[in-house]
Amino acid sequence: MIITDEALANVCEAARHFPAIALDTEFVRTRTYYPQLGLIQLYDGETISLIDPLAISDWSPFKMLLQDTAVIKFLHAGSEDLEVFLNAFGMQPNPFIDTQILAAFSGRALSCGFATIVESFTGIALDKSESRTDWLARPLTERQCEYAAADVLYLLPIAHKLMEETQAAGWMDAALDECNLMAARRQDVLDPEEAWREVSNAWQLKPRQLACLKKLASWRLRKARERDMAVNFVVREEHLWQVARYMPGSLGELDHLGLNGSEIRFHGKALLAMVAEAQTLSDDELPEPLSNLVDMPGYRRVFKAIKALVQQVSETCGLSAELLASRRQINQLLNWHWQLKPQAMQPELISGWRGRVMGEALKTLLADY
Image 1 (cartoon, one colour):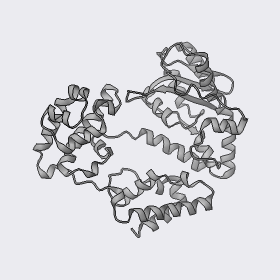
Image 2 (cartoon, helix red, strand yellow):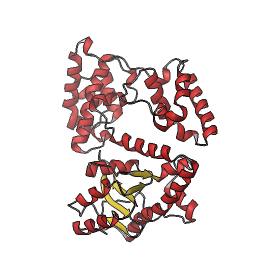
Image 3 (cartoon, one colour):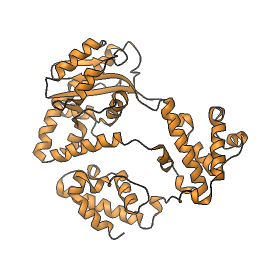
Image 4 (cartoon, one colour):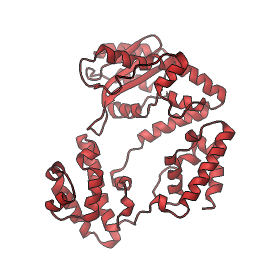
């Protein structure tokens, strides 16, 4: 276990002499907004290091390693790990390659778990019994440490094999593109002023109710980040919607709507103040009504047509339909096409490697809708 700044510096210096390392993190996020880092695992091909973040004060050698472009960092299903690194160190590993993505481009299932891949390559069944353990508790048990070490011990050699398979399949550029997309998604932080659009059933509300929801959702997200609390531990989403829908004028009305005691006790007055502010807005200050994507004329028809096109492309290029286009990505494309949501970037299905594979065909299809 690496528990001193000096030991961490030595580990990082040694790791920078290798062309690639395996990284993993263990973290806890039950009631917090941000993940709480409990352990970092690093394997450079010779030495496995379990780094205790609760004991380290000088992270500069590790940050230098994360940003050393001469060292590839392999992660498996690393989206949450990227968030952990961003939150803890203000940066992501660069360059990084996700072995789950490599596996998908080399003919395996899109969400192929690490244990499944290890067993397919080595025949070894990993013990996953510690996956839900408390990684902030100290001391860590021997079993916890063995579990954590296995995640990187097998990752590095398997990563090299998956790189070879992906290269042989002709999809390496696309796989790296997909890794970059994963990193970009993690850097895309939700603007509090847009948080209202993410609330379930917001489309059911009228303009003044939406104005109220906009204030409430922005306040809740800011409060969650400021206090490091999961958003639903500030005020539950369904309660936020109820407040916007009925715009109550008293604490008693909040209680009648079903808000719990702590929500009313800690935030009741703030909620009522935002309701009152929304009541005073002039009509031209209110947002436009939201459209519900699935209720748009032709939605089911165009969704089915896109799925059929994706299946056709899948059969032609040999990649799974799930990798080519998820439901979220299809809906993102349709929201963009019908201009239902503001989007700073082009939809994923018509940009990057997906755009090269099927972008023109999708645009031609959408022209009929």
